[in-house]
Length: 320
Image (tube, rainbow, N blue to C red):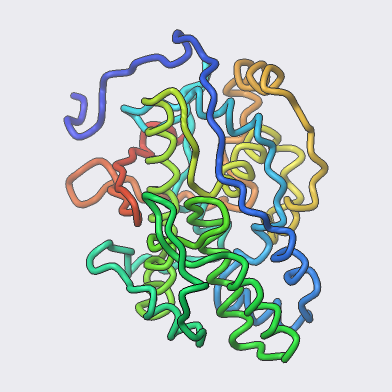
């Protein structure tokens, strides 16, 4: 008997007309990447020990056609990419392993949102009107003065605050982007609760990703505001399992050095249309464990809470 908790209606995306256009927020990351690449080795090691493997995420060059094409196959009812021959979706465990963040005992919750003055105090930045900004419906802190402060910290070898500031910028510009040139209140809230309360950001990252894919698919247009670097890494490594075997260790850093295929939208569609069960890499090279969270108590699904929305996903639908 089918479990009543699991969606049973399968509406095939592949029979529908593809071709709607989406884009995604591309914050200018050149200055941030320059800081990352020139950090002393010991600072990088201490950063990874404290904040996980997010350090090299800004270095990943995302192929826009890959994301534009992938969203066409999103099934909003099932929460999976429904390709002609397979269904697939990222899992919590894959993202946890990628990011080197394994704590799941404390999950992010929205609750009372963090105030901008609280994060400025944590970062040891003086509040002033020039650092705040608002672009409806978003409000937050400007990227440029934050990066100016980071560079000042680096020049003065204030490594503890360098690590803190760098992590904050990666959360705001890469993991939880909102609009260009800004770290918004949603990203601020996640980072503050990660730093002060030890919550895991991973379910929030997936909630943001799945919710934005759903929003864009329903509207048949729009901007994807989620961590496209992780999504791009995930799809590329699953589509090329043989090539991906050498990134089982430090996958984000190693993937950032991959040569890009630079395919067009048409070629990406052809690529996804021809993926079969036999050629698809069902297991990530960096995650070989069989342990996957598939239920919440008696409910056969996993609720994900993000800073902007929540999502219910069913990994049991795609596991092999």
